[in-house]
Image 1: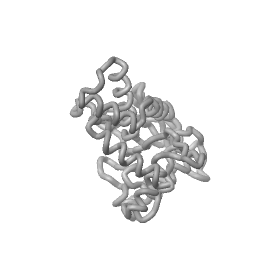
Image 2 (image 1 turned 180 degrees about the vertical axis):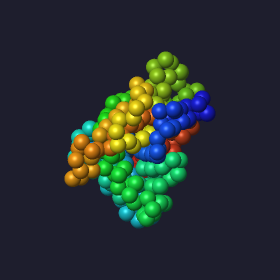
Image 3 (image 1 turned 135 degrees about the horizontal axis):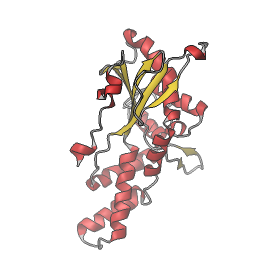
Amino acid sequence: DENFGQLSRVAAKSEYFRDAAAIYTVEIKPKSGVPIVTEDGRTTSRYRLHQKLKVARGERAEESAYDPLDLFSADETRTRRAVDALFACPQNNLRICRDGVVIFDEATRDAANARDAIAEMRDLVPKLVRNASDVFDFILTKQRLDALGYAAAHDLVTELTSGTTTITSDTIQSLRDFIVAQIAKDCAVVFTIRLDRIRPAARPPARVRVVHHPTDGADASDAPIASFEAQIIDVSGKSLSKTFDWLTLNRDILDAH
């Protein structure tokens, strides 16, 4: 099913978005919002621990300040903090396109010709995330399905492939939940956005949401209107043959703190 599961309907090709002066797409890969409690009792995210591991291995020069727990919190201050951290260090967690052309990602974040658009999106994105809190809640619900954990999942797969245990409906369900959780921890949310000074004449489809976003110091009555659609993408299936690799990486991440 990967050929179908990985691809979403492209909102920008719908009639409602086609007649806009410019179409922006903002892709966020939120990563896991399930908290981890370390051995010393601290609550943190797997992403933050993975950042420490990447720096220790020389894969990154510095850690990103982004924390998925902030993005999933639905708190205004924490959401803005998460988005600011993504703009400061996007890695592969934030990408912005205008009319199909990348104007902001890890490679282009310092491009002079994109600074105005980036400033506008930086103010808008936290509002989009909060408005689409139900989408992020849905992802978090799927992330929490995993009741096995990496070690138990790997042991179970090893037993199944060696024939030392019997496949039952409970076994199938637990492994299905484990895989769905892994997909949810690695999916992305794409916001397709059109900006208008007044509400578009065309009535937006039911799936399209609308927010006002005055910039700092601007008159709210003159605020641009952002019509957007939020979609979950990158939901291709993951193979149970990877459980050993996931277990090994997870152990390295937990040891990195």
